Image (cartoon, rainbow, N blue to C red; front, side, top):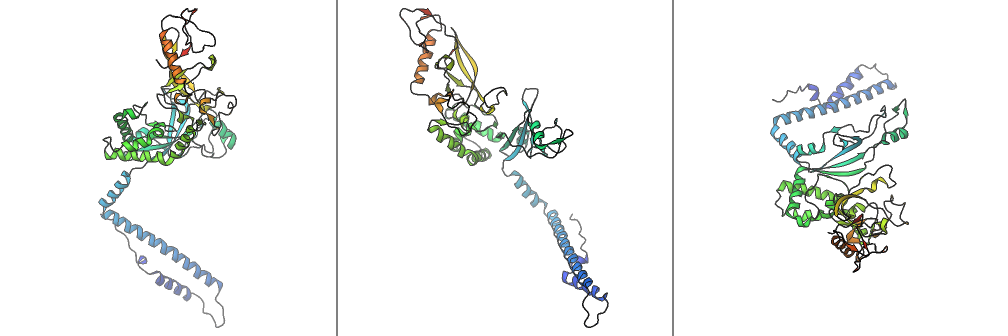
Length: 442
């Protein structure tokens, strides 16, 4: 039942009538003036004060009346209001969160993460044992997206904290008696990641499964994607093409389309910039991670053996990975895990970590940290085999074939300048079991 509203007479009395009554009362209380007398200033002040009070009261009464009418309308038509609320809550939209990764590890060896709606900072009175944080903490992103089916994906601003973060904040802001003097500025995110909700992820997996030949190196995907979002860099337009012919229901298509559109709106310009550089045979630190693709061969000459040809196959997808603080290589350069074949009389496949974006020419050394410093792709210490000079691929094939031939003890002829050990003599002069030679093409 609608609540009753006390409509007092004052709510129905026009403002002009009430003002006239108040003014008449004030004038009746004034002493009579003789001709030629001036109106005392206190009368003027009193009139001004009365008018301002009546205006404020009038605005307050109008606001109360409007709120009362709104309550009556809402209670008289609950079904219509609930329908509107449901429509708004079900409208598809992505949401943004802030993720803090601390140096502390959980029981599985992973960085402990905290999730907030607002950007993190430290606050006045914090001590050094405190950590930067937001003020509105939320549950884990995976749990949140499972319970919010109208959110296809989340945009995550990630903040990687290390042992120096808090120390630097205290030094910059200042502290007294071990406590921060004032709130510090908001932290700057280390990266902007994407977490894909279950509906959109299942749609992507379905498309990849149905068209596996068009997605080499991908069989399924993780929901968490770091820049440069390589799956979408390589295949965003292909997903757009296939989403309507892959048997997806309408909800799945809507979720996927919103994700693909976000990529086009926010990252396409950067992707196109990288493609232009690669077409010129150039790369810089900003775009190096886009140079590598899952499952492809990288050319990795062994400069400890005079540049002997060597290659490896990418197994874990390239990503920005922090190196040891003792390493002279800037932390953002990262590593990629690859499979290589070692031969010392027997072939053995082993996992190697290949550092990316290390220019091998002296002119580039020391500039690896400059995002815009252009480097020739073939001047990198490791780069995709598709960029190698003509003849390199066939040389690797020939070398792999030769090593395969001598997988059992064989007499071969070689000399110190014969780095690929490709010569076989009719009158062999020595026994060779090459140690540490790698060939992925077998």
